[in-house]
Image (cartoon, rainbow, N blue to C red; front, side, top):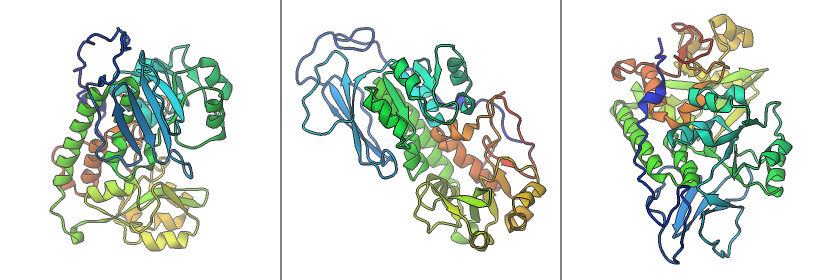
Length: 400
């Protein structure tokens, strides 16, 4: 069975932020300013993420998202140290933000583990959907009456966001008209577009993106260094495998006659490869997911798959797969019982932790995948996120 212990204990959050020295006040703002002085003692160096960059300039930072949303132009945010004068820049700036920020509206659950790791959960004053949250510390914060839920009906409530006046709205990178309206009404909207990263470690590195808003680069660097070390150790376990020893893997789920598969250039596909597998849609160029309407095409590609991961969370038995489509139940992976759902660890409201903490902890995800594809190589790892259709019972919520 999967481990039910809190995965948060596996993250050693650095408590190494030293006491602020003059000329900073207790809020981290400058009390006096000298031109040309470097006020950022700790800096983040981006090593794996490709969709954002960060540069430092004495008393301000420039944070740029290359693809804030599909079809969108790059966006640059000016992060100005509070108490310092605003610089005069000869370039387009999409938001001017005084850092460190004090309040944030979180538009995606993938932002929550970074806020937790950085010790900034209490700055969450708004959340898109409360029922999607699974982390206990975040659940405790958003249960407070003054925390705003701004997308409970599935549509962004512009009025609620503007009325609350948060320092920053961390958008989910959808390019919605509502978020454009929020920005036009004077609220700083920052597109947290981690989902467009093509590698698990690239996505996890967005902890440094969030840290830049709080001047918490030292903590982010420490957290990320530990994750990359653990990830590399796990991948080394399967590095010796030949192509013949690497099983073919299908990833995706069916919904109303359409199969939603992970793109061949997605971080999911990269995880399969890093775990010692081969992805059946490896030649696909999508960084997100893509739709397959022709099930004959799907079946033809999936016949070689020995494993099927990220299947529907509704599956409890082979009969459930057959109810979606008998052809799916006839797939070799299904017949062999090698169907895996990512909902083993859930919050009390049904939020699935792999879509929350799993984005920051790809080291745990990759260990889970290795335990599925190569159980003899994983050591003593207990699965955290994945549930077997044949061996495990579907969870009903709650973290223990």
